Length: 498
Image (cartoon, rainbow, N blue to C red; front, side):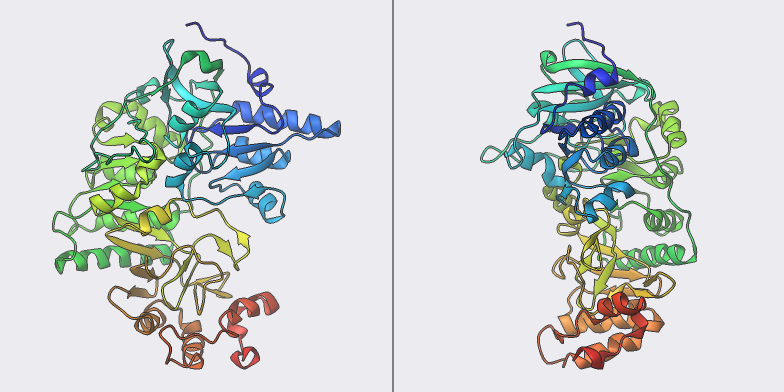
């Protein structure tokens, strides 16, 4: 079958007001770029005429500015799921302009298949190759591409020459059956392959191929600093101690790590800690730091959904593909984040918190309980099923005006039942086997910043201490209220909240 090669503008014109569109990619890696940029122009033109034009957008995770950014600024998004990091999109969400649904990333594809969101009118898939018989070879991420390809009425392929055809063969595309026909997912070690290196579709559904040369809108993360370096070392020291105690097998266990400068600092510390053997990763994103560790022999294998790396790092992988071909694999997000596999492999999860309360409940999404930051991402997928679940964060923010340790979280994403370890630059709180009151004492003493220790002890005493989970309900969010009032949690006067 000969494909119809069209411009990005022609492809965008196929998408109509009210459509549900599905996009490839996971983080800016592997996402649609050219067609969504043109779609924003259509929305702006229609709005200038007084016509409505908005679509619903379903992705694997976040995208780049040429998708979430331009569409948000053009007011072209009615509904969006499941995760994003774009500043303009975030502003629109917190301004009430976009209906945003924050969903566990492992659930996005299956909930689409279950029919929870309706159908997919158009899928836009970035590929490094597409064949006449309907084989689509993805680029730097798996995401929800298999599901949206199979569900979509029409498929547009962005054939992006900025990605090397060397990516062919790096993906392992597998889509589980839906209940009641689902079987076990036969992954027993991070390197297991269970699917195909491509997505197979009916070629008749591919209504256009857009040729592009558009690198991923990759972002580098801030470098380490004394605080993140201290957090990273505390994580490495904790895992080393657990291994020496026999809690973690001597051969170690696969790791999952979130995104950002703290994650990079943690991985850097683990790479330097020679008492920890070379290890494997089963995770949703791989950053530059992991690629460096693979080259150094400290990471033996990386299973991921996305190569969330800088463009020069990605090019280095393409150039050294013979080296990386047996050390990396890319999966769809419902497989990379699948709870069944996380539990089976005994993954140690390491994620970042916005705030943690005295009893180990974690907020990882909302500022002061109301303003969305990015979303829960895959942290819940891993935390709830991990062998050991770890949350890290600096103990303070905004020059000390905000404490990350609070009496009660202003929004809860991960409950005390799922959280094992809290680590700040101040220390480590091991919550395993502890009652709520014991957890509170460990978190205040080991993780709180010195400026807030007495404030938190005062609250704990104020709460009475006799209940199973002691709280003074009127005062529980007092530190957040003080932040809103004076801009500094340290100014709290508990008497004003009794």
